[in-house]
Image 1: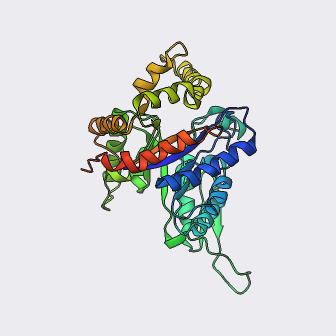
Image 2: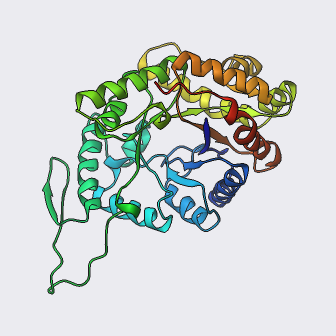
Length: 357
């Protein structure tokens, strides 16, 4: 199994923008040094705990500090930006990075981000994302086009002597790698990914959800008549994972350090707000013992324990290709976190099986 780092980031609100930026760029370097294959940066506009509104700025800085690791925004929200502009910027990044770039997109789940962009609700977001992808593919083709859709219009002229030289909008190698994230069972976003041949990215993962997402992806691919070869190694899954030399040490750091702080200060309250909006019981409560949460909901332990837990997860879901580990703010003492990344890449990954049937 491959591992990547998903730099959400879970940085406490007291961190300054410069501190969040510096820590995030340093994590791209640390992830590459540890042997991870990908580095993703989240995009949120209003959340105090996930305070990166423009992941491309972090990725641009990381482009000069890394050589092999794939860099990816995770994810741009197409309804909030004109697709031709996003396509042009993504193609530029693809060429700067000589192909080690994935464009991550999602429809958006944070209602306050939507309000900031003038959306009273998010009912149109999926349809807008699909139309955005249609336009972006036209931009990346490098061919002249005119497009008038329900939400946007765009055109690109043929080169003539009457025009100044027009730069190429084609990605490196001619093809843009795109991933699309989803979080709910039978996710419509995962259906779009399957129909269009995008990388499926599962958030909020449990074995049942990972299996459901792949089944949803494969069914959508078949319905769209896709005949290109693909298997579960394409599937990306986000998980909270931490590794140390022993179970006791890993659990202690998770319970007493930045991971627990993020759960107590952000993830549990956020889950309770989501549950209140949905009218369903929350998964976690602030009354829960953090040690129980770590043991039941996170993958924490020695390399041997993490291997065992991940292989059990694989058995329950039939597997996936790349685990994106949620990043936490260990900037006050990076050593334990960076060591965990190294153990994941070198000790855990080679011993976690993936059923690609």
